[in-house]
Length: 341
Length: 220
Image 1 (cartoon, rainbow over the protein chains, first blue to last red):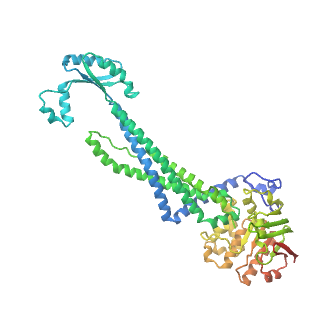
Image 2: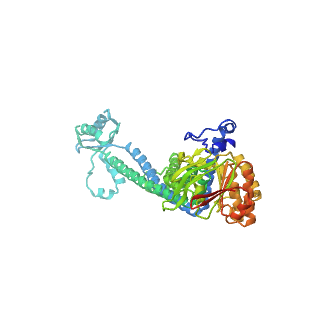
Image 3: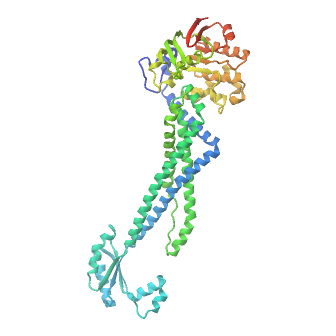
């Protein structure tokens, strides 16, 4: 007490400013156990978090609106990202099926074709070579192309024999396969060699475009989310102007005033992140039944794998961070400007 | 405890709040500031709280020249001072207990100690039974006592009051003043701005009389 009278401005937590200020000594100091400031600080954070929760719950309707807007804004780019990721996975599977079709000249007979197939199979760059002679090719074509009737009208088989070549590596895409194609094309009895990798490359290019589109969309929507957050927190600050003045009057620092608002931002982010996660899980399941139908038509067992848990956690953490950043941007100067009158 | 040296405060609109004010209040004193409204009573208190800065001159509080305080230091000055206002400045969405505990939460008092000290302060102003009520449920005199409990809960060395009896009837006003005298008796320096001259005259304390920002009279 006596110490206080002599020197009323003491700042135990922070650096001392000005020559007139001295650290408390003797009895005053021994009361200032190091645990007390830490406990006090933790307690203050707990109070701020509780305050934030109370403030959010006191206005359930407007809080729900804010959270829902944030949810949609988060779910949209995240959902697109997840979808693209899954289609990419499909594309990688299909790349394993990349093939070169070696069309043989019409006069090559079955025995010569088989010798040719064995020659090709022995090449280092070739994993597998399979002969599809013209009769077999016709049957396959009739079954799968939907033009079986038209083919039966023809008096002869228009299809050539084909050796289907699976390269041992498809790294580097179609251009890397060009030397192999040239070698195969130079072989006796080969009419034409086609690389069937091209459409996979097109798919990859389209996916890359979609990815970039989603990235751009995400940047725009994240900016929108920050704006929503800033506006919400500014309104919250404005509605608490008097309280802020009282707190500053009894010695609350800017940091103390700021803290509940930062917690509000984090809380909104948490709620929106969890809701967006749930929305994506539900949405993917809803979409999956139709995806299965489409895949079945292509004789594929493909289906969406659902939302990976790691992505969901990342979404929630990211949303909390965004809430914090938005709240931080909103409180910055605003709180410093509110002074007791 | 408080020293004003040639302190002037001129507002941007040209109004002269204080005009070359000189006085010294010692530790443990109880002092009234009187004067008609606009004489500079509130301005004087705001300068002590660093709510405003003087245009010229120097204000010392507890040996600290307030000129040397940066805006980051001001909260720590205010934690050493208790303030009571005419309009109470209570938070109406928090209970009486939470209002009184606010300065303790702000200065990082441990939780178990907050309860003990806030209840002690409420007991002192006779409102211990109403700690769970919201301020709106209290009478004007009770609200003012909550404000006083909040001002003293962190045991400040200096207690400031701006028209603490402004809206109260004479009986309640006398009770409030008696509370301030109690705090003064245990060593707290008390500075009260009031224009309730009949009440002040009954109490035997030093009185600073302001007129148009100047010190008109300093004495009993």
